[in-house]
Image (cartoon, rainbow, N blue to C red):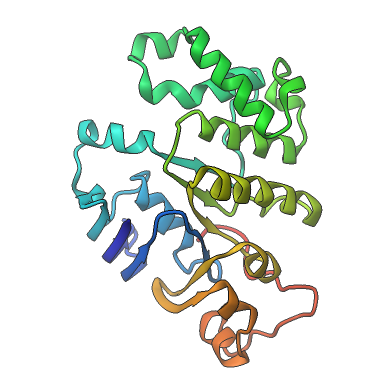
Length: 263
């Protein structure tokens, strides 16, 4: 179980991105975080694996406070927390295979990692990961040659190399069209259901949230303002919608975009 207890984050410019956020994440959930740009979604995810250091509070994973760990203590924890980024975070000049293999760097000593001296076992794992996302034939291409949807699937394959217990997905489909969005979220859903990997995903299209979430947390101005199941959000009232997105917010039939950009 992952538990957020009174988590706070204040940036150097004084911006309070998280203000006492508390909720639990059960193993095997597909939890979706929703909210406007600036509500704290990305900050929350990046605090979870310590890409950002929280200002206060606790992030307890099976009783261990991730927020309090030293860099050395954090290393084995990070191996088990994969991350899928909005803008893919691939090394575009490297091959697809080497980008996927980089997911094993947390298991290697620094010298082998710097020289890309991966074992045959790791290379076999990389081929299997690419096969799971349908990109085996793209393995030797440069990452820059791939489409946006393909690059995001490389990011998912890279995350699989960590053998993660949790995948954090920070608006993973924000730059993709609706068809590709369903492809990427379908890949994450498959890992969630078939491998039992817990997924915590921030999304900004309500129809996608309704389709994929098993549970939903809504943030507004750095605070939790909504908690619901997938069924709850499919039956969300206008009052609940406006509690998250503001009194001026209106739903649209196509499934509203509920933010883009940094949060």
